[in-house]
Image 1 (cartoon, rainbow, N blue to C red):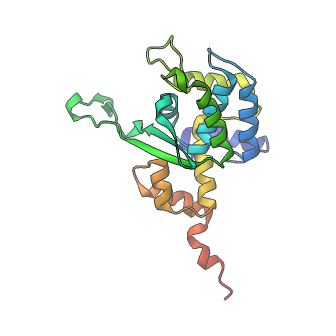
Image 2 (cartoon, rainbow, N blue to C red):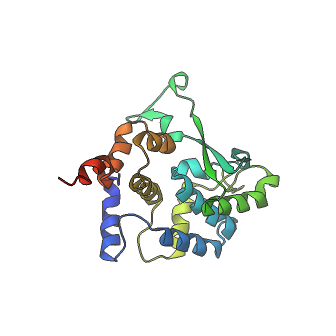
Image 3 (cartoon, rainbow, N blue to C red):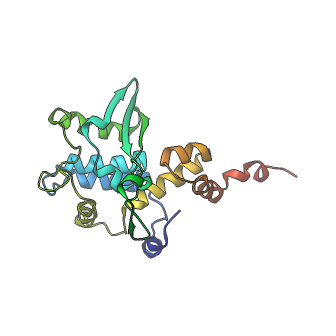
Length: 220
């Protein structure tokens, strides 16, 4: 569900006539605009692919910028993308560093999406154009990591100049809302978004009114 610090942005979206979540038309407009811009050495197609990954998979920003070309594969009729789930591996606890031997190795989880999905097509086309180079999907050789920093994504969103507030967690929140409304189960949602607690998925399903469908459809 939306985090507290996002509430101001949500209120601004409402004032401008936009909803609490992104529509597919808004997503498409963002990708179309991104495709026309190059920024920090990354092509417009690269930026368009990044936002397509946001929407198609609903992953966290830190999990997307570090993708390698080898993390993507075609498996049958699906596009398979393997993400490193970073939130499950913290280096500090309440500001205190966790000893190296007690840290959890970040798990890796593969998500599959049919190649018939139009956002999977966008991702595949960009991946096809860069995969032979190896390395990161969103490279930035000048950085210590070798890939773009999360800050660059925030800067690029500002560079696009949309009227309505757009922020990275909004993609994740919007996709979760769409899936809940499409009657995806809480177990599927927990697995897809790699949430630690099933309660998070249940909040989305409850908000969509799906969990009371049988009660709502009664005629007595």
